[in-house]
Image (cartoon, rainbow, N blue to C red; front, side, top):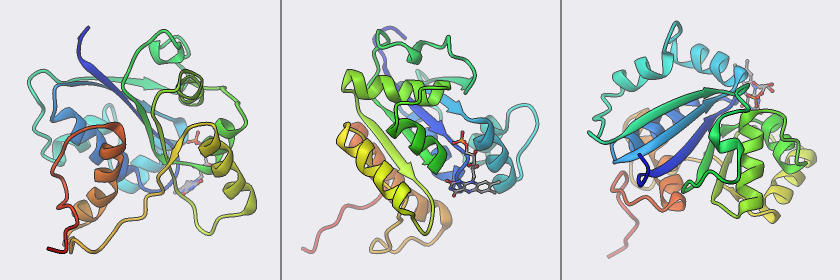
Length: 202
Ligand SMILES: Cc1cc2nc3c(=O)[nH]c(=O)nc-3n(C[C@H](O)[C@H](O)[C@H](O)COP(=O)(O)O)c2cc1C
């Protein structure tokens, strides 16, 4: 695990847990160490939207999504309360963090430097250490407060990547539609993929 690429995926209590799950699936199909953080709100919305609950809803859902785990891939799951987890420290090296979906509450905390749980602290660390931080904020419509928080986070170094799916590749299923967003997140994490056909007019 020492020399493996490490990625962090956090799922917050905004609608669209499936985006986070599809991202984790894509990462787990590669030889990466994937660190997952699920907020309390994220778990509730996840269970509501996916009908999974019980001991390991994430693993159950990854199984349903027919994830072909890479032999060398490893998964570590943390609650938002585990402030002793490694990503809470700037000395922990990783290749990037994505918060997908990101609630307006978590966005607000990050943009004001309120590192009060493992997710917001890890994001805060990304910004101070200049590591990739991708936020997929989900709300509609957006208030001025939401917009200003996005601007602040963007100025501090985060990539604001709203989960706005695209249709020009003619997705036929919800999964394909979600992957139009996941593909852009992978691009920004520097992960090679062929999840979605790239645009070409030739
Ligand atoms: C079914 C459901 C859907 C929600 N969808 C959103 C959403 O799309 N965006 C958002 O900002 N909050 C949404 N919320 C509210 C958040 O879950 C709530 O603000 C929570 O405190 C966020 O905390 P967290 O960021 O720590 O997960 C939703 C709540 C529920 C119950």
